[in-house]
Length: 101
Image (cartoon, rainbow, N blue to C red; front, side):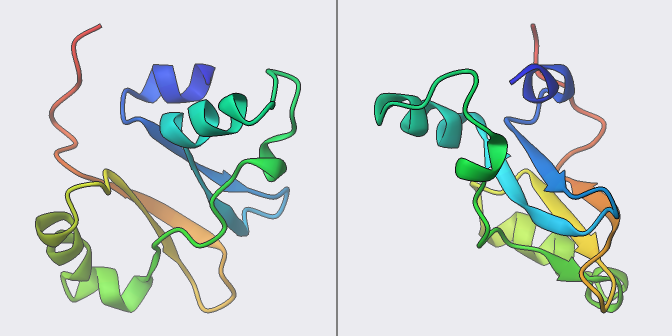
């Protein structure tokens, strides 16, 4: 929750020690899990959305990320992965804008 607050995007990308994509967890995912009994001690792997949208490096270069941001209003962060599902970068909707704290 601290990382989500710090990045002001409402979600974070979850990776393993090798930087391989595990999914995305949003503040909404955490809230819904807590309503079902999760606590602040619940491991993130019990909450993470493993079906999160990601794109390949080639799709990012082709502009697919911006297309997703235009058509999917609920997506603010988009993991960019290589052919092995290793996170190479994270695209951010409107990176120049930060939410007011």
